[in-house]
Image (cartoon, rainbow, N blue to C red; front, side):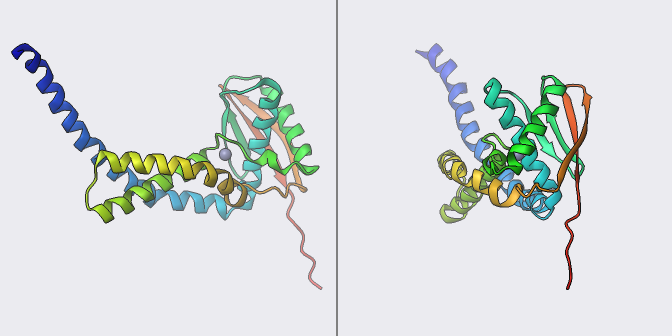
Length: 204
Ligand SMILES: [Zn+2]
């Protein structure tokens, strides 16, 4: 019995410590998310060039996954184009990007939405953080239950909000004047370059 207690007490202590430390860490992380996320979102949301490249990045991965099933490819968009990371044939990725572009130009706007998009996950994290901070202020204490509640509610609402965030904030589907210029294969990633002609406004 005493031996059992000898083993159980440190475990109990550790569990209690964890129950206190984890919410503390989560509180700090939540505040950080709330502080940094809007800025990153704003940067993508206000840059239509990046939004178009982001849509094309998703279309590329969607075209590949239609053919080969789920992949571990990930990517991000820049003003010059986009990068696809993962182990795959660079030329196959390049060809998929051209197919993705022409399909989107022909009206398949839904190719711009990708289930595992980083900005979707960020939106869901942001919601969880926001909920947690609200719970924190309304109950005046950070505990493991409010953390779980925020995480569950955050990921639940995030699954709806994520695709909407992509559709209205982080991608743009007006790709009529977008061209794919070429690609550079690098170590476990490919950079695909795009050119976006300036839209001409005629002032009468
Ligand atoms: Zn994305």
